[in-house]
Each structure stands twice: as structure tokens, then as C-alpha cells.
Amino acid sequence: MRVITVANRKGGTAKTTTVVNLAYGFAQANKRVIVLDLDNQGHVMHGLKALGCVQQSDITELPLNTFFTSIVKCADNIYATDVDTCNANTNEEITLDVLRNWCDSEAVTKHFDIVLIDTPPTLSPQLMAALSAATDIIIPATPLPLASDGVQKLLNACRNAMAERKFRATKLTILPVMVEQNLKLHRQELSNWYGRYGRSKVLSPIRKSIKLAEAFAENKPVFAYAPNSRGAHDYTELCKQLIG
Image (cartoon, rainbow, N blue to C red):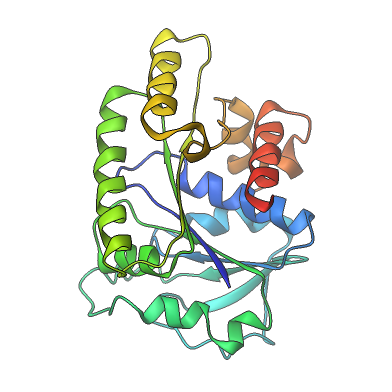
């Protein structure tokens, strides 16, 4: 099972926007996707709601109510978990492998090709379980010096855990988001990332686009809201890169 975890310990780094749009892009490529929302704010459903989400009763045997309350069908090939927004779950005892075992279970693999995980912006048991479950870890960040410091710390932590076999991920990449190519500082920091990590470790950038924010306000992925926008173009390129 391919499990893609989108993580950054800083808030406001387009984690949920990325998860929502990857889900839609993968579904358009005929991949069966389930999105796990581990952030108790429940924002994933805000980004998918206008697609016509309905409670799905034929996939109720997935045993992980610690993380979510139900499975919702959002569109063809897209399912998402509905979280209990009144319960933060931050202090619960969660073992490192519980989410990994769930993703690899027969109940999940027979229904889905890809698990996408949206994570909370805090160092929590949920985040650690999501990183442990991942085959691919994506760290979205705006190319700025302070953001780079946080990215480096998370990269180091993930690399150490991978070396110790606590994490099973084989792909660890950075996703530049909210990129403004006319800003010298953004260009410089992107150049630093390419030099420090190599171009293969830095994914196709997502440029800053008002259409991405507008789409979320309309409860839609950007593909469904503004298919010809730069946001839709950039996430299309990202989906191709990840699938390829």
C-alpha cells in the first residue's frame, strides 16, 4: 500500500490544500484514494464537501475509531475520514505502528490504491504514527530562511527514524508552496534547497494563487473550481511527478 503523509510542524504550510488537491488529482488518474484527516480541525472535509460527500455504509469495517468517526464518500475514487472535531485526542496512548498496520490491512488494501494523510501542526502521537505509516513523506514549505530551518529539523528527525527502521518511508521530499517567482528571496531559497538536497528531493513548486484559497472557500479542489488556473496546473504537474 502506498501511504503518502504530508507533514510540517508549522501551521499554514498548505498541508490540507495539498492533500485535498492530490486526492482529486490521483482520482482523476483512476487511483482509488482514501484521505485520513488526523487534524481534529477537520479541514479536509471543507475542501471536498462540495463534490457531493455522502456517508458511506459499505466501508464501515475499517477498525480505527481512535482517529476518526466514519468514512465518507466524497466522489468517485475519493473517500475521506470524518473526524470528531470536539476531541483533540492529543493525549491518548497511540503506538507508533497502529496506523501503519491499519493502512496495510486487507480491509484497506482491497478498497484503495493510495492512502493520503493530513497531519496536525504539532509534535503529537498522531503525527508520529502518520510518519511511521508513510511510504512517502512530503514536507510542504514556503521557500524562506525560517521555514528552511524547520524543514531541516524535520528532515533530520525523519532521516534518523528511517535509519533506525522506526519509519519505513523510502521517499522523503520537500514541496515548495506559495512560491512567488518574482521575489528574489524565494528564488534564492529555492536555489539553496536544490543545492543542499538535490533537485530529485525538491518537488515541482506550487505557486501562490488566489484561486487555491477561493477553491477552498467554495469547498472544492482547485481542479473543480478553476481547472485552467495556475494552481490547477501546478497540482497537475505534482500529481504526474508523484505517480510517475
